[in-house]
Length: 402
Image (cartoon, rainbow, N blue to C red; front, side, top):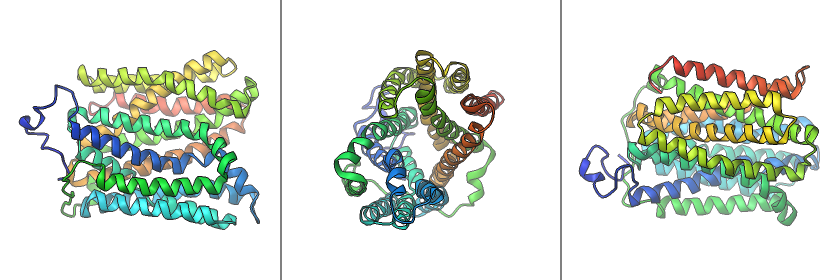
């Protein structure tokens, strides 16, 4: 097993204080968070600028520009499960390295592309490095169960940070080095991540290899709520951010190039309550209660947006609650899933989890577009998100396995 120490061995945990992280755990979390964050930039960094860039290329049409935007998520969703299965059979690091090479290759294709077809190909190849599941599985392999939620919280904050960095930094980078330069930055990040994978993680690390197991084991009943949960989280994230920019611009007169300020301070304000939720969950040993509370907070925050999106202060406050709940659940769900799945199907299960994540983002965007065209407009988008989150929250109260 790919592990620092045997978590069932009390002596192995002796050097650390209760609830504290071992030095090797901190190294593993830092390195894998950097790898995860760099990959998420492939999804986020081009979003604020790619549509305008692609629209100016020869032969561009709105449909094909949309394909260029969504191509990354398409190959991500298709390949998460196969690469998760592969990581269970040949080891985490070889699969992650393959994914990083594909991500870097796609970035280089994008840097050289002068046509829309080339950009689409670049995004498809970038997305083919679908190793969210193996990266998360490796993090679970390298941390003890008592600190795993905290470790996943770092990943969750890294994802949120990548999102904020993208919103703030993409226009600046585009003005300085252009979209081709952004692709080159991504290729350089991929190379750095490969170095981190082999030299930044605690050594020695033995590869995880398990016997072939039925894929059905990754779909047993106890795991399904976690797949549904991450689908809901990314559904509401994508749909909400379909509505929020419109609310800021059209209702609150916040110009598009100034909206990053709101996102930045709202995200920073959400970090302390997220940390409190994580610490209470661990120290009070109340993960079920905190998870349910967070689901309620997520739904309530979205419901509040239905009525307060015309008030900057109230909308911002609702966004703080939304991000606090989202960040905690984004950490808690994979942490618990990794425990329930067990070593033999951990990579496969987290591959399914990542597939549900990207499908939720895709479908959330589609549904938001449909709802925004109804008589309810932006309020309908927020209301639909609140309903989806609320239904999942109610389901959690009917289960004892959260």
